[in-house]
Length: 184
Image (cartoon, rainbow, N blue to C red; front, side):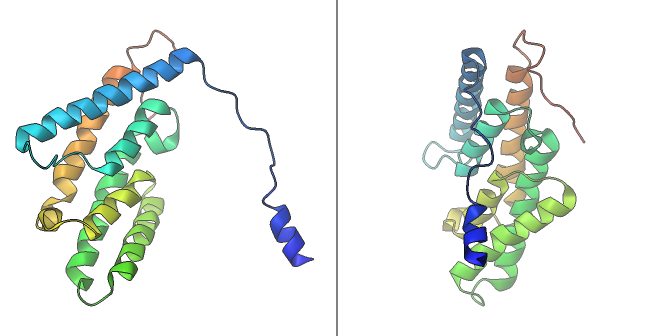
């Protein structure tokens, strides 16, 4: 009986939402393109070889801030705080426990503690988990940044995404498409 009740919880409770209007889709595509293109150009100004600012977690942030600018995960507090706090958590864990804990445990702790910190600070931004993981499994170049990592490329990169989100998401004449819904 318990097992049946458990699996019953996995049934659909609602119907899927309808597709967004094409105008919203096109604004999302435009924002994601401009945001990642700007990050790429900015990154290449530092080094044409390693794309220093092009981290996978910023691709996920682009989906949120341009594709769903109205959700809490996309707001500036969450974008900046989620990335920076998760980066701080991962650097702390690596500095304290690298070589003591195995990599799998360090990876799990970095994401889990990042989720904990984001919950406590009301800065939940799902790509923050990737930001933490990137540092833990990162190359020597990423790891060599140590306490600089949360600030550059992370904070600076998230700030670039935020500036572009402010510009692009407010270009639309649709009064329902504006960004942000709140700052703090």
